[in-house]
Length: 132
Picture 1 (cartoon, rainbow, N blue to C red):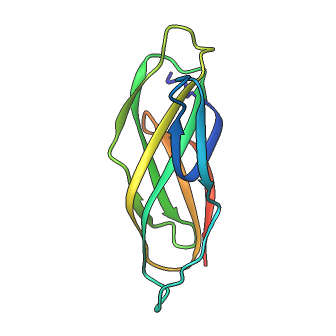
Picture 2 (cartoon, one colour; picture 1 turned 135 degrees about the vertical axis):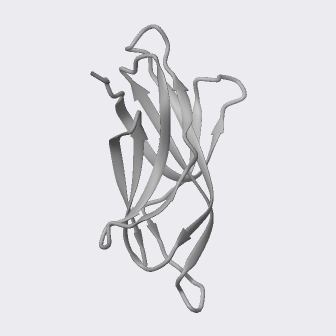
């Protein structure tokens, strides 16, 4: 039986920075929950870059992980990141930060999207993202 990690935080943001003085401190820049298109026409929209920053615990071993974007109304998968391996330590109570940087996010229309974290082929956590 595959044991999924626990997601303490899943943040959608413009960017993140690691504190040069302490590799345990992360600064999150520009939290995202809504995106408003100012283009004319408004859609389709190409959003230059977004980040998904995960804080995980209770993970075991290692496994492939990815971020998937789904359009809620249609159930259509819009984009996904390439799978990457997350390596957990020996202590399952350790807390690790896992950033995903996603470039050229294409949104075909306004509406509600779901940004999903998948680990080992299973959906672990998701966050809503509204485009207007």
